[in-house]
Amino acid sequence: MLNNTQWLEEDSLDLLEKVENKKALVLYNDEVNTFDFVIESLVKVCRHDVIQAEQCTYLVHYAGRCAVKTGSFKELKPLCEALLDRGLSASIES
Image (cartoon, rainbow, N blue to C red; front, side, top):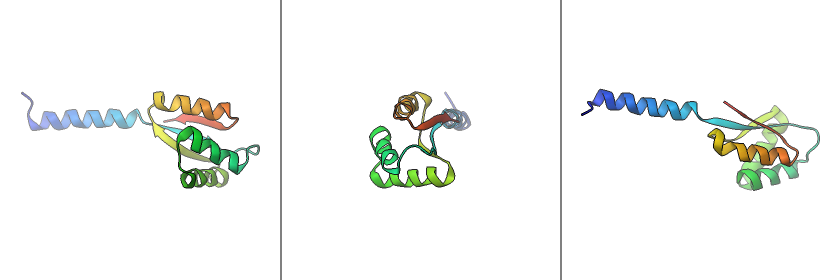
């Protein structure tokens, strides 16, 4: 039987493992794709609503990059590939 301290330690380890496994899908600015195309891509690929896609697109344009989605590597890999297939610059980062 586990005591309260052991439960807390196990819960903390589970939470730490989830946080460490969380990755970010990062979209980078380029001089090729239009705002409308990037917005459309984020809506279609990442399932953003239009407002969220617009905000991310402006962040990418003015800051050079934006984390457009978070999750596990397994979840983000097909999204990243879809953005790359559309000619956007993206990567998965820790």
